[in-house]
Image (cartoon, rainbow over all chains, first blue to last red; front, side, top):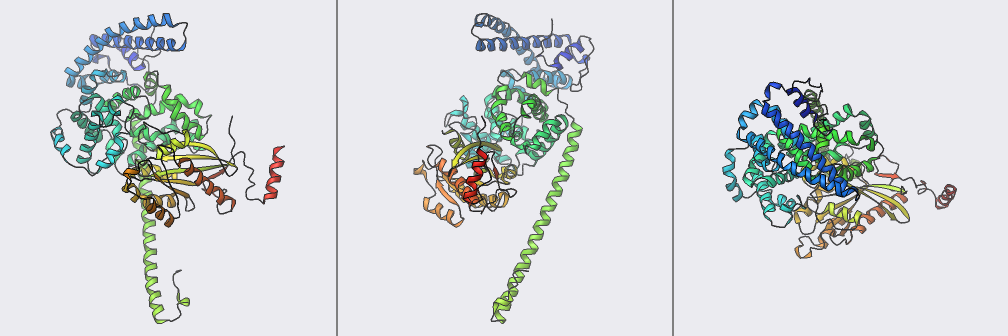
Length: 424
Length: 213
């Protein structure tokens, strides 16, 4: 059986390692230790690979149905046969995820690598609510009991939140109707959060994340997960009034581009095409406002498991995949490309971009170094600003004294024209 | 085919959250109301080539997120803007009260010469009006702004707002008050431009003839 190219290299290397074959060395991957995998796991992974392969065939045949009428007969047959095989495999994946959820502590402790790989393959829809909560440790949070009390309170951010509710997933079934359940719970969670975190209050962009949570789980649970994401996943830093962390992410991401895609970086610079023009929303909404929802949801699975690193990885993968086109375009052309072309590249599913994302070399140490660098730059900027302000203050004081002096002079001197000291 | 133009103006759309900035831009570019749109995160962009006073002008428009804290992101887009639509919502006094802050930002961060048109948007919601036309006109006058009430929903005065702003900039170029060649003017010559604007009329016509061969 030859492996289809769509397979995640991490999964196939894992499989081979488990089977005793030498693991191909790839710097992007951390090869797992074969000892972690029981024969059961290996079998399940093999099944998942098969599922993936069938999904791929399914996609292809669906494409050919759309693409060419002549082939539609045979494609439909292969499509339906793939689907029926898929349902068996779906069952298997349910059994697998059921087991993972039941033995969560054990899996998290002893089979973290396997878990990571499975999450990268996508958490089955019906398991998302529970698995997301487990991944961010949002179960049994004491704050959950305060939720109903919080809803009775008034938040200073209410007006601001209200303005954005109808403008958050306006095309999604759950949120689109005015005063629908979706809009109500979205408002509730945003308001409750603004009450427990007065410093952040409400920040535009965050409602897309909460909205996604609400598509999977009840409001109290979504609230707890959001609290966790804000605390433990750098989101709070991103959404604080200074939004300093966003600046840092832009800086780090730009340095990554410079290192990995120097030609593209030079083109961006020549066109005055700034990172924030396309990437601020990537970070602030974890691609939820940039990519088709099914794709963004799959990336969010990984975000829940591995954090903000996935945004850097996917972001760079996207640039890599589009480099050849982008270097041909001017600033405006590139903006259009990001707005209109890139989202559709992902219509066929997230596997390709996720796979590419894991080929990206992400150096955590380097990122830390960049953070320090950025902090130094910012501190220096702040100091300079303070100096300017102090300078201005001095000037004000001087003017003030000058005016008093002038008034004094005008009192003793009947001809004020000769006494102006305003131009000190 | 690439459309040629005489000038390129950089524009901003600024104002508080929910005043309809993105909808104004969308109405201007697509000629329709954007029914289901997300709230803007960071900045968005649109452009359109228009005809103003016999000149083809390309407007390059930056649409910004309205929440206060996004200013740290959006302020870098102010630099070198030639024109701006300063938007408030006629049904929300709060968005009107915030105008002074936005104005200060525009004049300090963009350029003191930036041409600004004040837009009282959501004109179609007259029943919920909280800011009168008269009051806003006075504010506009005091602050040397042009002023229109607009509706991104019906399209009323939307095109006018952008064109009025562009025409004023063009007039200022022709009168010599604005110098497109100054750094950060927010104005660029397009490929069709012959840089004849500031020359005497006769010689401008001549240049045109010479270049048509």
